[in-house]
Length: 268
Image (cartoon, rainbow, N blue to C red; front, side, top):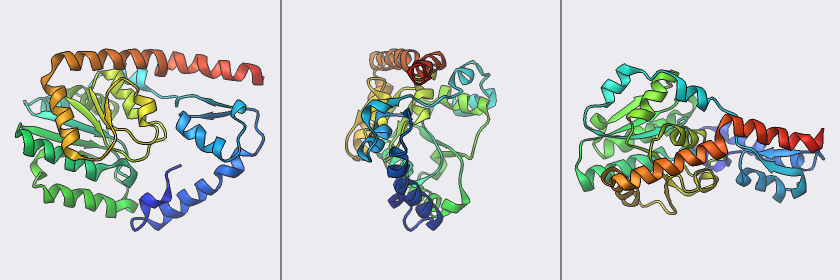
């Protein structure tokens, strides 16, 4: 459950919903259920801290449609649009203040400032009118850095457009401050998009060695990481191999089904 502090001054209804959800954690942890499954050890840890007996808990990544996405036809028009020689930075996720879009814009601006390459930031995710204050902050930051012509907003996408965005991206950059798992990380692993991320909440656990991750918020650190990925073919190959290996061993649908059934056996 996202901490309500992220929505303070942005949306009172989100603050109330998140606060209410977090207030229920202790009640859920002490219901006495036979089995509790968290999307990550990070999530499950909140229940354990609230009183859940550890032996009744387990970790199971969310079920998803990534295998179907990998088999889907990519939107060729979008690939043509993005395949123009510019380095494409991609962020996938709903437009919400815990997702770190403002920091992402700063890191992208740092890359443009330091390296001067033709580059584009693709922000793909649903825009919620209730969070317009946050969306306005992102747009203001883009204007502050004079990046308007370099940013491509996609307010929701078809399956084909989503796949095209991953295939055309040179780096998936995630500077979110709070994630309970983050399915787009697993999507990037499956589709071979190199990952640079901020090591917060469940991100290090989800990512492991399948990308580059760092503590701290220095935008030039993330800009330099992207530049290293772009310029080092051996590193890109190593990251893609590690990402594919992690996806197939940990997040593929068959693995999740098998793990879920193993959890259920002793309960049933």
